[in-house]
Image 1 (tube, helix red, strand yellow):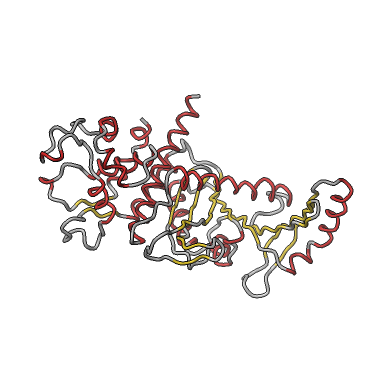
Image 2 (cartoon, rainbow, N blue to C red):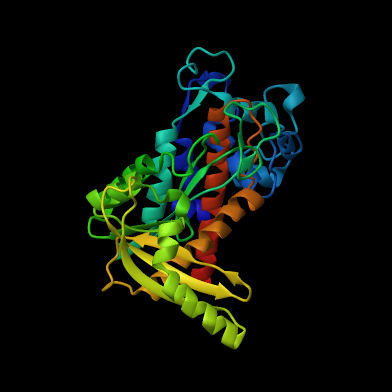
Amino acid sequence: EVDRHIGLLDRLAACFTDHRNPESIEHSVRDLVAQRVYGLALGYEDLNDHDDLRKDSTLALLVGKRDLTGEQRVRKQDRGNPLAASSTLNRLELGLPESATSDRYKRIAADSDAMDRLLVDLFLESYRKPPQEIWLDLDATDDPLHGQQEGRFFHGYYRCYCYLPLYIFSGEHLLCARLRTADKDASSGSVDELQRIVGQIRARWPKTRIIIRADAGFCRDAIMAWCEANDVGYVLGLARNKRLQRALSKEMEAARLACECTGEAARCFRDFRYRTRKSWSCERRVIGKAEYLPGKANPRFVVTSLSSNEADAQSLYEERYCARGEMENRIKEQQLGLFADRTSSATLQTNQLRLYFSSFAYVLLHGLRLTARKVW
């Protein structure tokens, strides 16, 4: 019902070009895409699960098959199996746009740009009218690798070989899931993704205010300068250094005394202007949180384009910036619940397609979540 309402699978199938001989096709691209996405949503993470699932008449009904028992299959050895096996689904993932027309087996090619646009279109269509303001949350996470996949690098922070996918959410809505190699900065490619997403949003919602939010890994002058040049707000974590800590020293002392008096955590805030010695192109507003926990100092900083009239220091940190932590739950839903980390194929491009399938399974289940809220 959710798929019929949002038209997800038909539109996702339209993002693929099928170069197969029409007279030799038993499973349409739409059938294959539906089988893969529904399988992930139902908890079947691996392609070889479909060697058993291909016999499932209920899943065949869900996919849209008319021959629910598979008794009308052309080849005798396929009868009794209404759905595709893992080998057929694997060829769906391995097709390349540049070679699909001439390849003997892998003749279905995915259009990644079309899938990127579809994620944003589904987000836009979830609103009956344009909102006054939206927040875009950016984050990077680790996708551990256990083989010799293309683009395999060791990441010092995560202490493993991994990919470093970039996610962009707006609330619970997924707008971008981009697989990247782990030899890059956490913010790598963010400006390109923001330019694409913000442009698509503003084409539909020209008056909606857009603000981005991310941790200190995204506090880069290129991102902030792009936001300032394109009328996009930002609230970003800022890594502490000696200059910042000196600027917050009085507030830290006050927080320490309060903590020692009460035995409980105490915090104060300071709102000031700051510019790095070399890396920033201009001075910007910084909020310092002077927090002292029993036995431990915990200073934190954020940089923002929002004015003090829009949000004072405390509310900007506690209510605006800290809300980004909810995005981590959405990433967990993708990786732990919908197997976005099953990137065991040899090539980066195929693993990106697997991430797309997981992403659209998330969109489907989020559509179910939205529908349930409206019903209840």
